[in-house]
Image 1 (tube, rainbow over the protein chains, first blue to last red):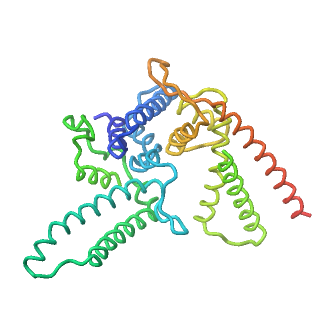
Image 2: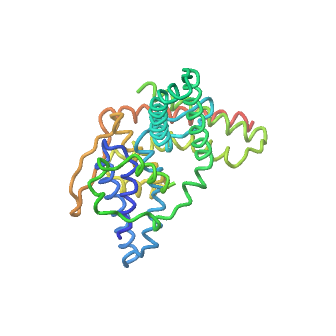
Image 3: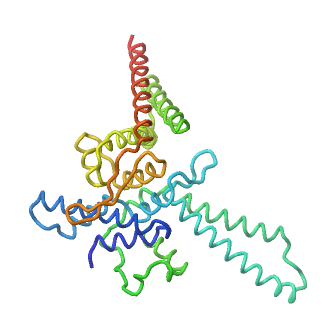
Length: 186
Length: 140
């Protein structure tokens, strides 16, 4: 499987739908031009290892997608806690998690009321949501603090192959797949 | 535009003051602290360099090559998003065009970009002059 395509596919998976095609088209041209330029210099076609080196130089797909997704957003209380590379993923995962929690709470509230006779108070709901917020934020802070080791230590040759049936793109992509892809690139 | 200039000015002055204090006090700053300061110092300079280089039209890869040939290495992961940000801010204009049988996105400085570049260069020269004067005073 073509290494640059797998790389671009990995970046595309983490990009927001708006502007995705444009960003990928531009990135593709830049990567291919660089590879052709290197081939002209050496006089030989690039090996997979040389292609992987160029892609590694371009950066982790998650970081690239993060830098294209947002330019200035981050989470900071004084010192910046979550940088712009990870902030789009932090925001997405936080929203998904909180939405799931709210749905679960809404579903179990009647059951708890019927079986135990007690009701979930607003304060307990808020505590649950705050705990979710705290845990996710803490995890992302840790990842952000160690992002050099976590994000730089990756190998383009280990990127997953492109599955033809997923080529139609993010419309068919589930939230679960999105999270798994992002975690895989991390 | 004014906000960007003020931010650029404030950031750069802060870095210069930090670097001077570092040398003056002989403080042993950690490597990561120095890296952060260097990164912030470079950030403003990179914008200036990219705007200056894009007085002539380039697409991403050739722009990176030109900057590298002039001694300014900039990572792809920094440059390509930066180009889009500068275009969003109206400082650059871009156009998809075919070259060597491949569609490429060419960037060049916009009219607003030219004005901002002139102002930034003026700031850069003023700060350089001030810094040199400060350094001479310290040396005396």
